Image 1 (cartoon, rainbow, N blue to C red):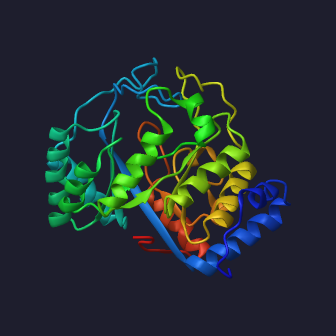
Image 2 (cartoon, helix red, strand yellow):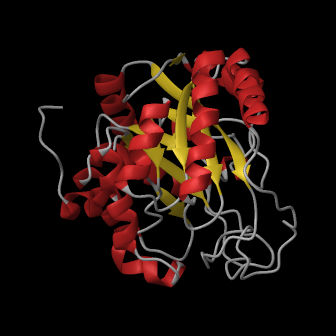
Length: 313
């Protein structure tokens, strides 16, 4: 709270701290830096399936045979505007368009920029994009169209990433986040817990995000998808996820620590995490799995004393 940042070694000590004391302290830090604000967003699967990348957790990868057989190109402007309008009517303040594949082509970027302009003009909701490994020029066009944030998950530490994916590199992800920042966008980047990584890997991931100036940290819990290499991975417990959230709060005290994919696997829908330092969430369905509906989330946030508002740009 005095403005100093903890080190990797100090964060590792927190991995063995008594959980109740750790989560209470993390919530105190959250309250000090972020007050009662809660940043809630939704995502739309703007382009589905047949992804060229071999990320071992993903139902949309063309490398694996999963129940996710649906494929379609970029959604039309009309579909994206209607989705944005529906979400805004439910109280959502940020709408994120996510597309499968390594990166959108220049032609696809032009098309989706038209959609972003229409969303901003007709709906007024904030727009976030997750379009893969784009370059600075593409991000500039997206920012000029009206988007304010770009998302690209680091997924894990640089050391462990090669165990998760071989078709692109950790450095490419870092380059993507830096390109988005240079283009004038805020950035969102976190990872997936439960891929076989260690707590040290998780801490290193958040330290990398901190170095990159990331202030929105999605915390995904692996939902083991049948047909993927991780289909038999153990699902993390509530306590394990709470510990991750609390440590991440210590690492980036003023961040939006955002519960994302896999929240439905937690018996309390994330309530304990929202008392352990988390102050943001993706509401509604995820890309290929179901999530927590907006009505349920709004009721929970009211009970916890949170106020829904945009945070960190």
